[in-house]
Image (cartoon, rainbow, N blue to C red; front, side, top):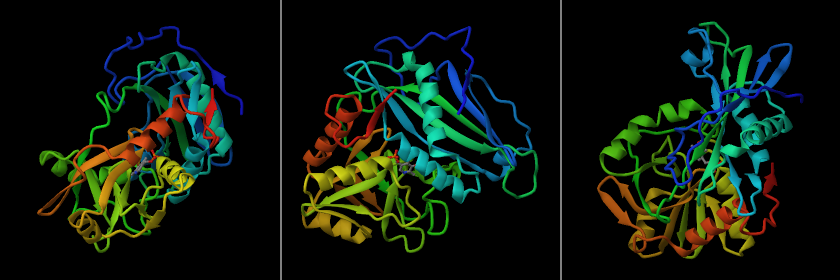
Amino acid sequence: MEIKITRTTTPKAKPAKGQALGFGKIFTDHMFMMNYTEGKGWHDARVEPFHNIELSPACVVFHYGQEMFEGLKAYRGVDGKVRLFRPEMNARRTNASNKRLCIPELPEEMFVEAVRAVVDVDADWIPTDDGTSLYIRPFIIGTDEFLGVAPSKTYLFCIILSPSGAYYADGLKPVGIWIEDDYVRAVRGGMGFAKTGGNYACSLAAQVKAHDDGYSQVLWLDGVERKYIEEVGAMNIFFKIGGKVVTPMLNGSILPGITRDSVLTLCRAWGLEVEERKISVDELIEAQKNGTLEEVFGTGTAAVISPVGKLRYVDEVMTIGDGSIGPLSQKLYDTVTGIQWGKVEDNMGWTQTV
Ligand SMILES: *Cc1c(COP(=O)(O)O)cnc(C)c1O
């Protein structure tokens, strides 16, 4: 793929060393763009100065939400090298989302090449403070100027980059999770497995409710019986029950996280007993009561491992362990982030340097 590179002539000031970056608030100097036109395919791959995009107010994406997105990171290693973590998995998941949303296929190698190209141009934007990284946000939107309900015939693929701060400024802190018993996120046959804005739009009401009550995230139950655990807002969920590592199996309504896959792979490699299966909220409550619920943690690109210290379900508030991070959660965090920052040897072949 040929990528035309146009560099900015007015670079912005980069965040200073030690500056609090937060998440998704600062954007780099450049962005990747590529168009799709029916009959022509993907064309005009380019890296350009970061800029606003002009679109007709009649665009498909604004009315019917035909869009998908991805999320991954570039890490500046302790050896100075820039690493991506399993970007081919994001490329593969892009096409799973695309298929569900009638967005044309994007060849996997094109996706990875595009990510590498824009990260390379803005490599100086990768922050170097402990725990920081460059968040990469690829997305595709339907751009047809048409109010009829039909798949768009034209699309825009963009990648924007955002230096982001350490998720845990002062160590891995357990979070409180709200098990939502009213709203649901996805149903089988819906688009829960796809990374698309609509899944987030429908999650906001529950998130607001949980936040108002002092919980940081929502844990979703299945959309039919509201009985089985699905996943957290933007993370998959794991439990350690009676020595076994248990996570809900992928059933079509759960997002197949890349961190989830990495954690399963590591746990199996470490000889732990791992189960991907249905887990009811009743089973959790029971395990907590009889003392076999050892650890609970979320997995996702942003936090990697997010230990859960408290779970709320209707009138029940469960404290997990002693409210501090469990040894498995800590070991997983240290291993995955160690590989990402080049501190631990990557014998899984998960990273590539840019
Ligand atoms: C992105 C996402 C995850 C986590 O996926 P990773 O690939 O591990 O970052 C989990 N759940 C939802 C709903 C997501 O959008």
